[in-house]
Length: 276
Image (cartoon, rainbow, N blue to C red; front, top):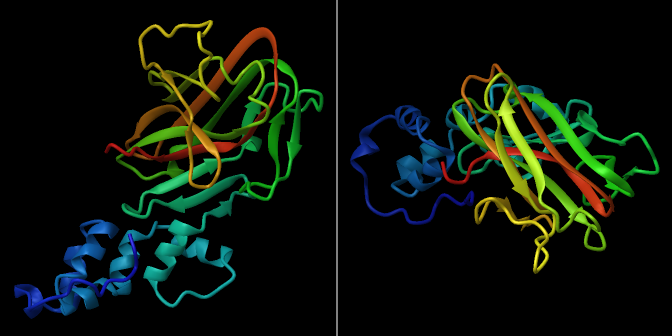
């Protein structure tokens, strides 16, 4: 969705007799994507879509506290909106990465593993915490040697948008095929605390052929997908964020006698489901 709103404008619209502020108010009940489409209706709509009052409605309520985190001045609320979509911000002492979904304006969060419980995470023989330029966080964990991989954590849903279905992903890279782990199904769970969790199985690489493990039903093991930023992701589960008054928990676990290594984890990502 681009910011060039002048294309496709043709003849006059019956709405042109309305005040610009009125048109902006009407459009504010839609989505940012709809607003950009509406800008092509007429010159009056194009003017209405440039309104600061409109884009303020699409910004999160805490947007004023986010502006100082950028080292520049914004000429409009629209510019700020698209910056929040395209340039994730580090918040909470660098332990969370925050941005907006461009088409809807919904909040997205990536949680650093510093905010999670990593089994053996403080043992330098099991995990090492490294810095790499392509990561959003200062330090991320790399698995060196362990038999029991367990990662779990919680986050309050106030960081997310209400009345929204979310998917939760682990964002990672692998080295040398992720020995002992890459081809093994890993058990995951996601759920609001006090409610039933959703469970899943994921791969970090993919199944061996023929594989030593068979899923209960075809398609139950989620294969990793490549991301545009060069990382991989697998979906841990999903949930519905109703009122932003709960805590959401997540976990993944794999135990076997074989040693495991070669997993680099950037974080746990919460973003609106694609199918909603």
